[in-house]
Structure formats: structure tokens, C-alpha cells
Image 1: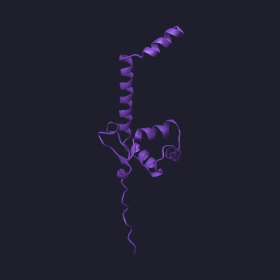
Image 2: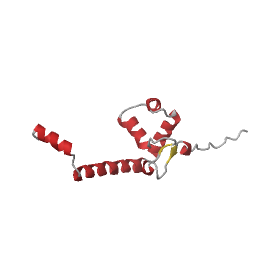
Image 3: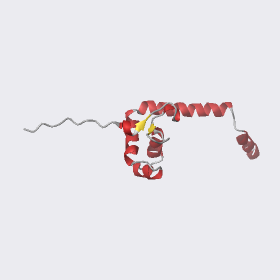
Image 4: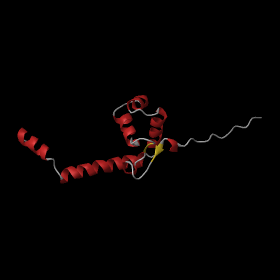
Length: 110
């Protein structure tokens, strides 16, 4: 009788890293300054395939799949951090309006 070996999960650690001094500690592709959230946006918002992302940004295809796996495993925290980043940008825009934007609005009569 054959015994079936229990599969060992493969760790994403060789593909996804997080260091406080790079991208503010956001999880990213090892050896690159490309965050998991960038991969998520290119795939889910822009509709790029994993192969297109890998080719466009010269990444191993496995790292792109690992980034998506990591995203789905940490979806709530990554989505919250993205929302916090957008809120911060909007607050900065509100507190420090663009002089160029004001001039353009004046020229258009807005």
C-alpha cells in the first residue's frame, strides 16, 4: 500500500518582501520597487494579464502570480492601505491647492 505524502506549501517569501526602508514597508516584488498593490492595479483595474505585466516590467512570471496570491491573502489590509493613501492625497490637495490649476480654472472662467 502506498502512502501519500502531505504536500508542503510553497512560501511566497522568495518572491514577496517587505522592508521598512523601501516603499514605506509595503509588500513588494523581491529585488524590485514594484509593490503588490501595483501588480493588483495593473491586473484588476487596468486588465493587464500576468504575462503582460511580467513582460512590461521585466519580472519573472512567478513573481507576478505570487504578488496576486499575496494580495488575495492580505486583501483587506492592502485595500485599506490604498484607501488611506488616496485619502491622504486628497487631504494634501485640499490643504495645498495647485496654483496652476487655479490659473487654468480662471482662464476657463470656472
